[in-house]
Image 1 (cartoon, rainbow, N blue to C red):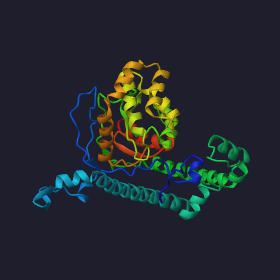
Image 2 (cartoon, rainbow, N blue to C red):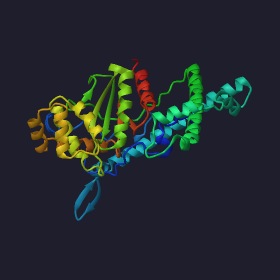
Image 3 (cartoon, one colour):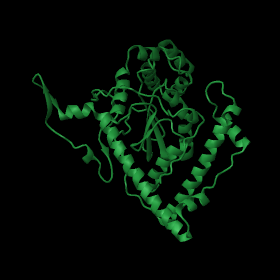
Image 4 (cartoon, helix red, strand yellow):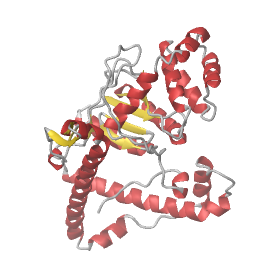
Length: 369
């Protein structure tokens, strides 16, 4: 059995989406050798390492795949064009392995514990995760902290909220119980997570020290509402883990957000003056107004030199860098926003704090920090 923590947030009760859809192409993803102060490419590799093997699913081929009117299409060109889809295939293979391994471990532990108590596994789980009552106070507090969009009153949502919170309490109890069994049994897992090479570069805007043991690379879009919603979670990650964590931001403007590419360029113009994160915050506070005149107004609000900022934005200085950000994301399999790589481990969408903490805690344990 696999125990998955329920997603947190009332919006998750109304829709399954946790990010903005990309629909982006996976075109040529070559990187330029531009200097760090202009369009420096982010380091990334389309390959992914996976303990226990995995690349045999997609063998490396060399030579010519096809000819069109005498022009060759090589396997190298083919794999570059299909990079994002191939990465998703590798990711699926890893997730299948991980899910199956978790099921095998948990089943073995539960059967052993049930045998020790001389009851069935179903009886064991029923005893350890009894139905939990949810009070009106708890449901209303949840509703107020996670208000749905539109004119939806509490009374209408109360039954669904109580059902959700009740199931979450049960799930949390099951997760805690099996976690205790794993700890008591000294379970060791040697299946390495799937990792992507999206290392920090000197050009990246970073919160925290570049040398931090936990490095988070975020691919985001200044007009994506889910990207905005995850910002408080990232703040909680930083508050919780302190100097163990550093966060890098990269632009991944989506086709439906027409002003996002220019907003990305503007953010790097603000970085020139040492105020990337201040400008970043203002952009997310004003997602529906990001035309050039708006971008210049926000520059004044955060105290940037107006003439220098205007010259930077007008010159399209950072267009290539924003384009390259997106290419490196596509090469690592990103197709929507927000997308995160925690020490190279992919976390997709505006996930709750617990999803980030799970990966970070595993990395801290792996590094003996």
